Length: 287
Image 1 (spheres, helix red, strand yellow):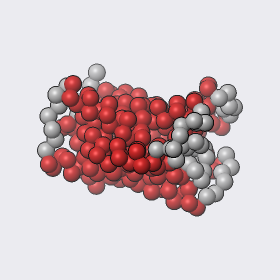
Image 2 (cartoon, rainbow, N blue to C red):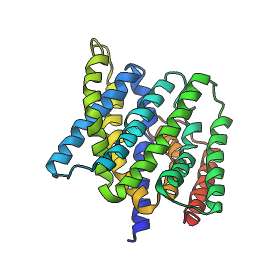
Image 3 (cartoon, rainbow, N blue to C red):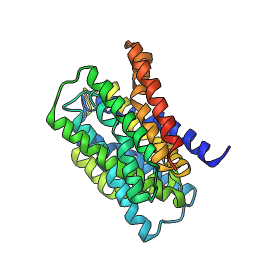
Image 4 (cartoon, rainbow, N blue to C red):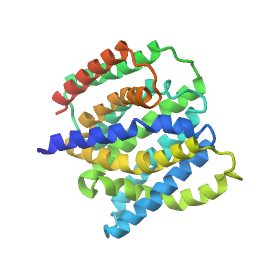
């Protein structure tokens, strides 16, 4: 298997894992404070990441890499989780699909700025078309507007795109799981005290689904998903593999149909096929 194919497969696995993040966050914030959820998920994942780094005796990153790791932490450890958790207090997870559809484009822009990539003009056409399809589909479903929620989601997309691109750039030298692990560990001195500050006075009355949501975003969204995602971006190209995020909303729909028995229409399937075509086109012209 060549390097590019391995990158796309790894990125695909990461994307599937991420597809459960917003629904899990939505369930968790129904009973957990958004700030507590953000710091708790980072603290839990950070402790696990520290254990991995110690077990495998990973070399400490250089000062230059540490600065970039801070950018990663601000983008994907703190920024995106906190902003989406706050947004999901105002909007539904379905509404957030509009903005997730913009994430591949944001990632590609930062891939040019931070990663030095230079996709062909046709790439931007397919990328913009895919984002438009996803956003248009979500709007067509009928969404309730919330200026506060929308502004928070837009900010989340920007910081996440930066975190993805910066982390993928570092993954070329540090490795995928090492990047997210070091970013989480760097966050621990802030996250652990913050957990104690924002921890609920009592956990009595908090139901199992909220704890399940916390567990998912801590283990899968915050750590395991990034291991695959950063490896995929590093091997297959940040701008190109980043387009796989266009499929994330539709995997969310598949999860809803399978687990929650929600209805999936022919329109959903048709848009999914069109988006897959856009991803294929973006891959074709990524370099």
